[in-house]
Image (cartoon, rainbow, N blue to C red; front, side, top):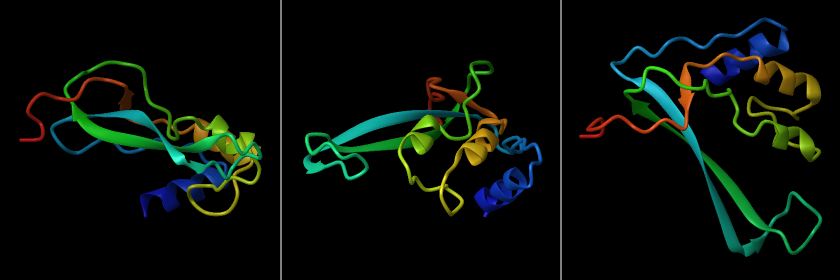
Amino acid sequence: MRVLAVAAQLHAGSPVRLPKPAGPYRIGTSTIDLVDESRRETAVSDPRIRRHVVVQVWYPLSARRGPAAPCILRLAAYTAQRPMPDPAGGVMNEEKAAGYAAVETNAILNAPPAANAFL
């Protein structure tokens, strides 16, 4: 539901700042690139390109400072190939991408996870 609320604010032209985490940890995020060599990538016309899946992981961390993570990692990929889906529905375009790029998150990009946070 939060994604839809953010999308509504973005499409209305309102600045968006995501709420601070309520728990004891800061939030980190990273991406993992996976390639399925047995499948062709359907988003491009070159049949030699294999299926790519980018997974974004969110996790607790203890770091206090670091580069802020964008709302959508690799946002340019959504506008490089047409048509690409908007995570909140519809099709991504330059105006929507600019709105997502302006969202301020509380996550730190590529920071190491908190020790013992998963126990």
